[in-house]
Length: 532
Image (cartoon, rainbow, N blue to C red; front, side, top):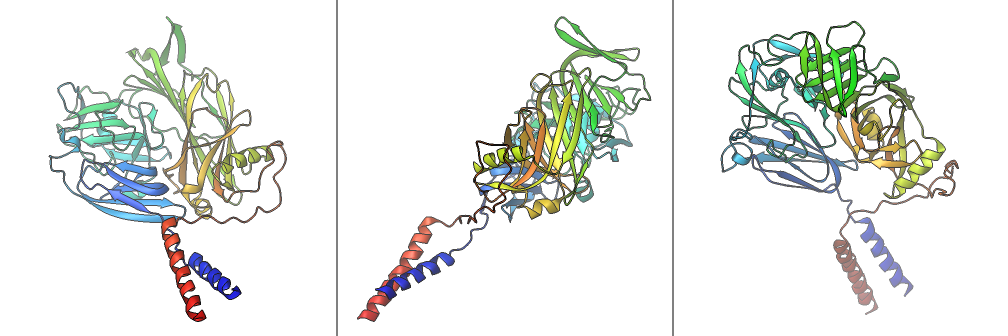
């Protein structure tokens, strides 16, 4: 009897050891231009779509969608838990005509009002968030947007690899998560950046804010319809630019830890009939600040800050512009920090503001570690995901004066960059989280995803913070830690090593049962045969 039990146990051990370790499973459906390609993963993954080796598009989730607008090859790369799977999809032409929805012209209906933009020959200069300046052909899609008088912010993370400058914000509205700005030319979305796509006389160009990869200009809440006219004209931002107008150069990062959000000289705000009116003297000044009027936007730029004030009825007389304030956004570009053993880290903050602060400052600093109280609180939150704190890259502290969460700050998007070696060492992008540390010490994990790379090739992690600004920790989740003393959050974490845990494998239960049953059956047969 003893030998029989031993044999059965050995067979069970063999069955367990023989179980395969499941890799990331990715299913792709759809292969028609203008229709959604759906990617389904068996766990949350970081997915990259790339049409015909064009500009990569990043999405994160278990089920994500992308609409290819041209025929050719769509590359799909999914990464999760250290596993990477790539699929190649041949995109064919749809049977009902060209372009998305076969609408012919990307929203060109009787009710569409197209704004003529006059594009002369030559080039114009734009400055990316990195502070580097680029020369762009005026007769491109980006040239059309520039000539329209819209304000915009561009990023050059993929310029070295693909020659692409992509939009992060237009008219003060910045992309958040998987939402952002897209464009079409004559109803088709090109696979290159707007700075690289050349346009022809009469082309119709649409820039629109996309809430998801399946959005169209017709479903967008913020489309910009432009019609290209070659030659000179009276369109804003044409071949000539007057003082106080034109392309707004990024002011570059802050020169110190403090970023000032207050009003510059020559700008004032008064209340009329319950509304705030902003008045700007556009006379050039040598104060290190730039005040620009583009269309119905007033843009205030200084090192570390690009603030956009949206007005509805702006007027200009003798170098003075004035209008009622409809909305305010601000892009903060702090100095970078260096964390010992990790390298250079950086942050960037997009704010939605209730108004223009009269006198406000944000002091940005980076520290390498969590306090014992915050670490205990974060460990409790991580335990809800059956995880522990694997590693901490940095904590970005934002100390505010003259501006308050909820009252002045309506929402914020946080971006933190870190060297790629740290990400790879601690489980890849899927393990990284941004934790919000409120002023009262409460913590929460924000929905975090990778939003490309910076000019140095460092991955950027992004999260939306509806609670405003305070502290933000960039960390990687690892194995679950030992239980934390919830009654004393100030107690230092235990120095005792947590018990070893084994991550459960994703092997189907049915296959395991059948396989084990077969082995036990064989063992029983052998035992009976021997007894006979």
